[in-house]
Image (cartoon, rainbow, N blue to C red; front, side):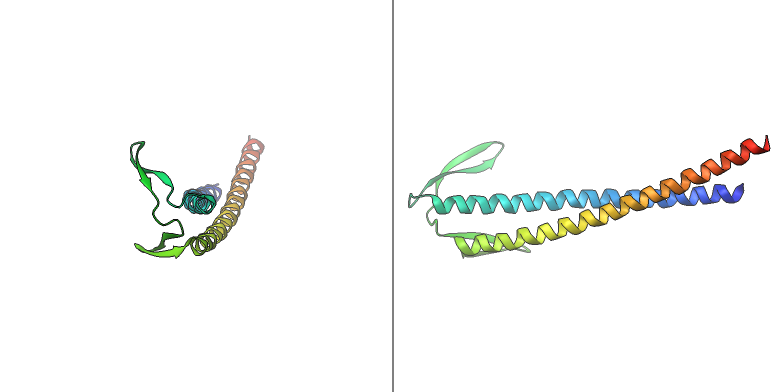
Length: 147
């Protein structure tokens, strides 16, 4: 009986650890998805900018709290894009779009791997739950047989 309780406690501990890992992966997946969506939005904006016929189109520049300033794009043929670690570089629109595409693909791969890891953890959690349930059923059967 004591051995069975130890097994159940060990399974419960493992379950909690795996659950915590799954929560971290789910949070990571959410952050990756947000990052990917941001890059996708920038890419779409640049693609739409290429279609604009005005040489210096007017835009609204967000300044926070739902407020904007009117502005003008003085060079619609290039964009300054972040390349990480606080650095940015000026690229032609086509190069910027290509760069963003590559980053989106990196995000897609990271999202795919995270989803796979999460699915694996969920399978392990299910296995542990089944083991615990089996141990509890065995204990209940032994208890009722002894009566």
